[in-house]
Image (cartoon, helix red, strand yellow):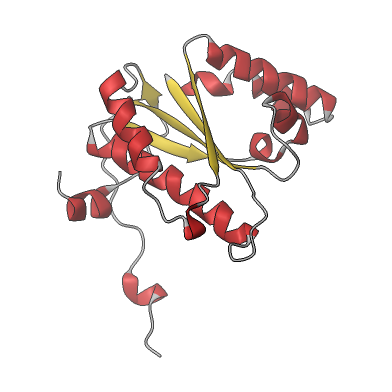
Length: 182
């Protein structure tokens, strides 16, 4: 797959199954995450790979966090099952570092770029992925359970696996709607 094809056909696949990335595929995905824009070369990221039984551990972290933070019953009841939606999840974290030239927003954006780069690397290798956020990306209890500090930001959970359905999505937006000339 060439770069233009990748950029113009990338999509999110919400239904993922085994197999997940091989060791070789995962290595490429990891390398892609580290090639994103990084003002000041400060590498403001951390990644946690979750697969196998660790998905159940993440589900327990979600469940305990939802209970501790008194979430709605539907959030609590679904918590343990959420990490089981794909064979692998990569938790992407912006690790904020005080820097005179690199504001927090740029560090978070860099971590966000890493999620897109990883998803594109997965897609280019015939895998599927979906970037998820929601309550568990914002939960202080989840951050605490993952040994993150209050300035760290979970920018997303990248679910990776093999698409369960072959559903090519057509473009939904027209460039002329979003681009203008000055």
